[in-house]
Amino acid sequence: MFIDLRTLDDGSVLEADICIVGAGPAGISMARSLIGTSIDVLVIESGDMDYDDATQALYRGESVGVPYFGLEDARLRFFGGSSNHWDNWCGEFQPIDFQQRSWVPFSGWPFGPEELEPWYDLARPICSLGPRRKNAEIWDKLNVEPIVLDESRLKFHFWEIATPTRFGEVYREELRKAPNIRVLLNANATEVVSDAAAHKVESVELVTFNGHKARVKARHFVLACGAIENARLMLASDRIEPHGIGNRRDVVGRFFMEHPRDRIGSLATSDPFHLIDMFRPGWFGEHVFCPSITVPAEKTKAEQILNTRLQLLYVTDETSMATMRRFAQSIEAGRVPDRLAEGLWDLIQGTDITAYNLYRRAVHNRPMVPKPDGVQQVYFLCQAEQAPNPDSRITLSDRRDALGSRLPVLDWRLGELDKRTLQVQGKLLGGELARLGLGLFQFDPWLREGGTSWSPSMVGGYHQMGTTRMSDDERAGVVDADCKVHGLDNLYVAGSSVYPTGSNINPTLTLVALALRLCDHLKQRITERV
Image 1 (cartoon, rainbow, N blue to C red):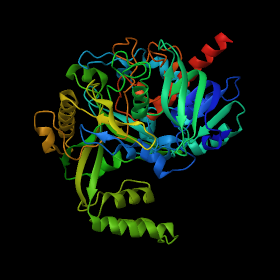
Image 2 (cartoon, rainbow, N blue to C red):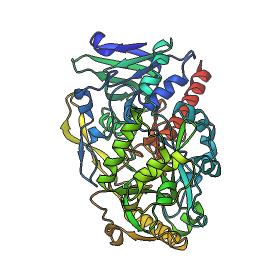
Image 3 (cartoon, rainbow, N blue to C red):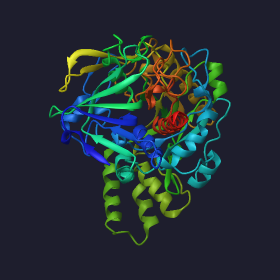
């Protein structure tokens, strides 16, 4: 059932067994997992079914650290959350991501990878992914012969890419029809209110743009609003605890992490085509796999670096790209030449790799490599793990949004280890490419320099993590291994804000797995008390 809070009486009080604040991938996954149970679930969503400028503007804030996207640009605030612009690049965290690494301060999860494996199995179809595939199986299906890396130094790792799953569209009808699920739309959570001893949450306060207020009372509360908003709501809930609910140790909002993305260097080579062809995404049934290069766990330990991946990209000249666009439009319109292969081969002489790949598809073999006049540059882009940093954080401004809530302030910080990791990985890459006779790798200038400065082109991956991190030690984390806020009996957090470390892979698959695991924990708690 879907309810618009604006249609309820001002001052309404709603009750539930579980109140989930946020209807993005984590919140919707939890609600779906509870369908058909005797548990009464209320999901709170700030927005409506579609995008609205005024609601989206509630995400605005300030950025005072490493340059970052506008905070209102990095997330979507309506039913389905940021899955509404998600490209569905996925992957599971690797064993080293869960380990306590002596050279990575504040690293280590309260459990190992085996704890999440069954939940990954359940999360994969929710994210429209197929079964796990081994590298050899993927390469064979893609019909590409990979370069033979020294796997003690570098290895291949694949992104898995499915058709974008818009959680708010795909799972809407299931939730609408579920008798035990209510979704409250246009309901903006402004405060989490605890009892006088700050041991238990009593309610969540809600407000709408038309001035209606409401209160939710529940046995258990789950914050699933994203890394910035989870921290913002907890910090703003200072009625009982002066520094924010669950923040007795001043950890809420700290350890903000992203995946820094930037060029690390280019490759001078007389033959870019095999490498470009090998690194391009390719279909395996209904799914796409995109290769990248990572450093094996033992080598990261030996070098004392982070877990980071590199992706090969390239720049082409505009003339050849315009030619290919015209050719693609002809194919889409049904105007396919009788002698397709010969036509493509004539087209790609002196043009770019896009044409070359179309030719390969057309003739199903490996033709002679054309002259690489259309490829201007081949380069490598990093998607880097960020070292946990307590000074990289979310705080609150004195400025307020349209509903009177204090705006978030993001102070994103990167350190020496983050940059040194890319320098080491670049050297390993350059050595391997030279050993294989594939060309000369050259660092971009910003990585040749010392210090911790990054290039002006560096961006994040829209992968916000870490602000309510998980730890068995309340001095180092906001939630415990069950995602329950330390010191509060019935407040939980779902989503990537609980990650102690962020790996090098996109976070959504893991956050769905963790959300399902949390849901199972709550089912057990409620069942035990019935």
